[in-house]
Amino acid sequence: MFFSNPIRPPFRFRHPSSLLSHRALSTLRCASALSVRVNKVLSAQYSRREADALVSAGRVKVNGRAAEHGMRIVPRDEILVDGKQFSLPQQLFQGADDVEQMERNFAYFKYWKPAGVTCTCDRNDPDNILDAVAGAIPSRLKSARVFNVGRLDKDSTGLVLLTDDGRLPNALLRKEFKLPKVYRVKLDREPSPEDLDKLRNGVLITTEVKYDRTVKVLRAKTRPCEVRKLNKWMVEFVLTEGRNRQIRKMLETLRYRVLSLHRVSFCGIRLSPPLHAEGQLARLNADEMQIVRGAVSQWLQRRAADGQASSPSPPPPTGGRLERRPRRMRATRLAQGGQARAWRETTRIARGE
Picture 1 (cartoon, helix red, strand yellow):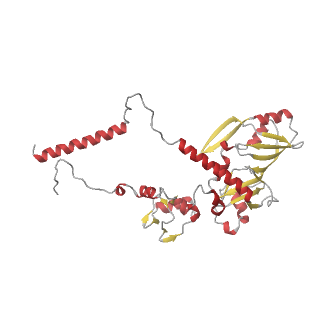
Picture 2 (cartoon, rainbow, N blue to C red):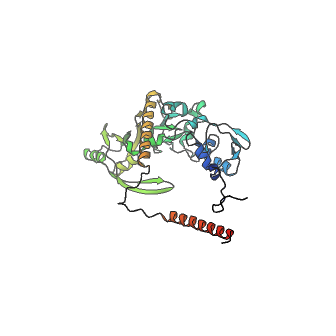
Picture 3 (spheres, helix red, strand yellow):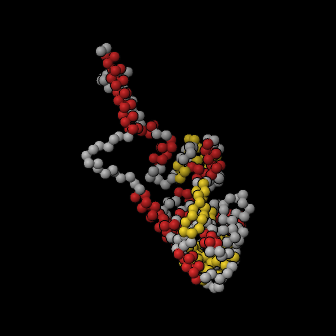
């Protein structure tokens, strides 16, 4: 093949899509549409670990092509698992900020937890909360993979929220929102006015914080809280933070022993009818759902504001001096210069110069 201009290198047109991997193409294709990761789509019928194993083994195909980890799916995609059609759960493709359709897309329950039930989704624990509520969940909602929002100690009783809406923990438990949780605690002796003031102003306690499979010991003073004496041995706490076994450790610091701890309210949702006894489960009513919508809306607005604040901005002027290029960029420029010099040398030889 000959070219009219021997100085310029031969140019072969390549479509931009050919330079991108299938994952990158999937990301670009779904940039403007609502999309969900393939392993989350498969989690409607498989555990997350099983879904990852299916993808790794090449047993999942999306529109005729083998799926990759991190690949994103849109509602119009066709998924085959071992050659069989996989029905897409449409509730996964609802907008994350669609708070008006929350009840149609997710399930929300309140549960009167009895003592002896552990707030964990680990089925290996014989006292896990999922097995405790399994018989009370309506049959048409059995497919909802609910989890507990927040925790109550195994020995404590009272209100626990259950849902399959992954936004709810952030919306209700983030410390900056300061949503109240109300507890009634029975003590082994009558608290003194001085000790009640100490509890209100904060007590230095040591707790463990578990994050990313690591345990960090935190020794810090508790936030100021409301503490009200109900009768001789009963005290009511209103907390806006949720450290591990916080109330028990606050009282242990002042040498009180907790006989019973009962949560009566969680973020404005109260332990009230249709719950009449321990072990009962009920869906949230209209007023309670309004509280949940407000919390989710507040969290979405905060997340959007944080995203705008963290967006990169151009660097300020440096008084006329140019910034030194990063080492990687300089190396790229040097490599390109070497390629150009090699091409000029090749052209010179071809001309017989």
